[in-house]
Picture (cartoon, one colour):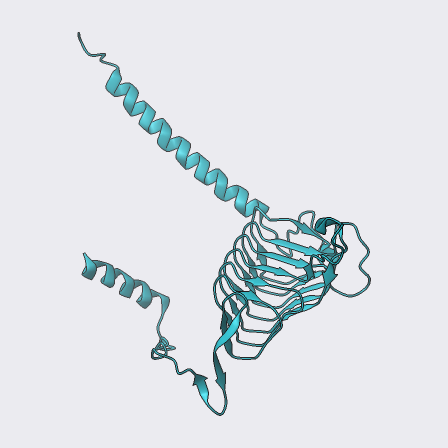
Length: 250
């Protein structure tokens, strides 16, 4: 049976059409993400109490409400699907003071939630991995005869000091007071007070390493500190080095 002479042409056209469709979808996706990004210059429908210069809230956003009581500092990066809420529900009058305060240079990883039914403060230059959950509210279960979801919750302020690193999937519970430059291990559940310059891990999280002026790091660090780049290194030199390393590994 003779082959259809149009089959190669048809296949070529199909491949070309698929490439064009792929390029169009990717271009459209980039355009939508750029157009949907929230900044101080382009806040869209959101009216934050403050939104600093250079801060970007990526599209698509998660749930955001109570934004007049949310203050976000400058040069923050808030990734896709991050939820930021102030108050138990939308359209409440929460008074003159901010409920959720996010400092300068904060990074909130994709899918993270910051739920501020009472005051939540995140200090400058904190970095959150993906899917971190911070809440100032906990369910109560005092009444054994009433469904837990219908009992009035308890609230307790949360504070996270400047310079902290919060690992992927960590949960910060009501009443947590985390000091400065603290590392919270991935998947940890933090409650209570965490001192400055500590590393905590586990559920519930416990201090596994701490730095003090008198003793340094205890237990001692097992690896040498990384060597910083010289101050006079240029971006062009770094690109050339990366290209050389790629060629050397081939």
